[in-house]
Image (cartoon, rainbow, N blue to C red; front, top):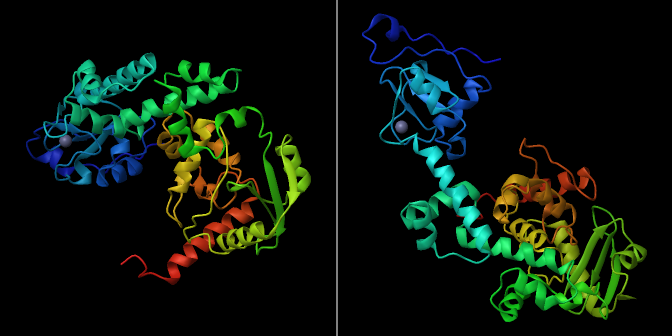
Length: 375
Ligand SMILES: [Zn+2]
């Protein structure tokens, strides 16, 4: 049900310069729309337009112009219906350009996907008829990433996809649009603890040491290769580790692991504190992009799966972003507990929602205890 806005006395008594506001907009909640308009929320652009009775114009929700009185405002699902009701487009926020912007971004994505390589920004902008700087901002606003990052993410995803099918790693790399294998390894080295050849063999030849440490949230399995931590998980044991890494040599922990485990436990007790623990994790390129996005969320804050998908370079892959959080091999160290659903609910957590809630509470509590920490 849509609440009709309060009647505007000026519209019936004074000489109306525009059409009178009237309740419309199937599917638009007037309070939510007004809140978005007041906040100049860019993410609401394209979902509705705001028509102002006293001026006779309609605006994007994010219009930077001074706001009219709420009683003079009505909401329309799009520019067409607002125009049909007699309103004109605002010259300041040019609400009609939205459709054109959308088309340009979609065209650019199609061009990047067809090309398989990074297209220089100038060329990309020219293709869609925009100035480079403006288009860069537009693209970023629409997708959450720059065109170059989008191309990189796409290339990584293709390489990972091909790696899981191809027997010859080099073929997979060329197929994914990398100029040369060295370039791929340079990219992958930053993401992967293991080189792709080891990855495709299921970790054969790798030694993993493990221990189980008590924490305030329960017993925690901590396992590491020579390179770094490869598994941190509640309620798991060495058998689970052997199932996960069938080709690796699995051994009990040594003194080096004991020292590492102590630092992991400290991270569980104070998840708000930054850690620089070495990780040796592997996933698909998209999963790793999501894990990196998680690692950049400040303690005490959360991001939605939608935001994570966009940051990871594939805004449409919301469900895959959720799966990537679920596939996180190192609990807390990659803070997948900071991911939640768009509606503000917690979503899932591999180790139970109680633990997720407890971790977030620890982070927020830490902030509350030191309110001056950032100043
Ligand atoms: Zn405007």
